[in-house]
Length: 90
Image (cartoon, rainbow, N blue to C red; front, side):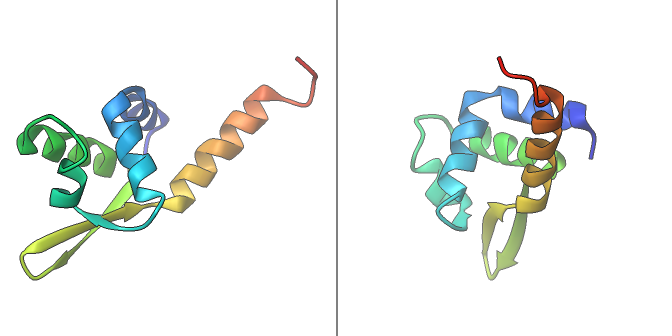
């Protein structure tokens, strides 16, 4: 995982919203797509970027693919941001 890929993935508002949806638990690609007014191909591309950044994981069950957050990567990012911020008051 590179930080650059992670930050690129987080830069897009649709991808951030997908992560918000997945906070509540795993969802199929179709369930995710139902929340947006973009094509299924567009959602598929967003999911691919998130997966390449290791922010989400997928599991195939029959003909469906379910996506869920990869909490360990999100925790690493939060620790990095916290460390970057430092202890000094704003």
